[in-house]
Image 1: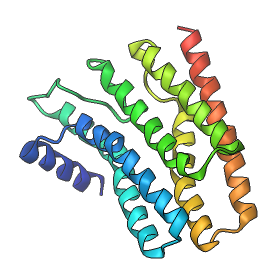
Image 2 (image 1 turned 90 degrees about the horizontal axis):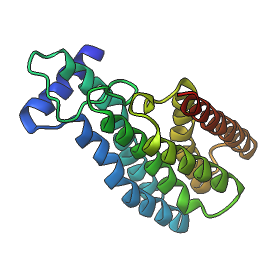
Image 3 (image 1 turned 90 degrees about the vertical axis):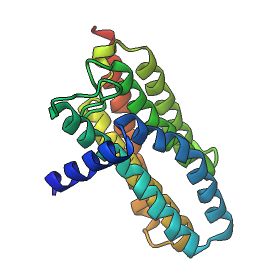
Image 4 (image 1 turned 180 degrees about the vertical axis):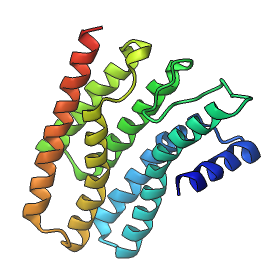
Length: 204
């Protein structure tokens, strides 16, 4: 499966010039539009729009996985493109800005996706933490722009949190208590990620 994905992203790279940074920019530019769709879903409770939005959201999130595969595939080719390469963790030591951009795009996406749910304790806590992490991504040394293990777990939890919140709001498919527990776990890992990045940044 991984080999097939590698061939697919290399085809996009060679045929259409799709670089890892292009995939990263997709997340950035899609974020406000997805947020608008979520706002519409929360007001209209449209199941059709919900399904369409979740499909689009899944495709956008997939770019975070594909840019790492593409970067590694490019790095293996003889004519390595130095324009913009980010490795599996969104970092490239020859192109540190790629690592920063990758991390920022994830935070921008999550922040925008949480805004339609309004200002409450959990959105405030997660958005505040992601803003801190965005600041760290901008100002941390180039070799420390890569996501930590806690950050990767946090990102997975946040990525799944969005569809859970949407489905809960539209269909009540997910038990309310389960949603609360998931939110608490996500907040805990989000702040563990903040601490781990701060500790890593401080001990340069």
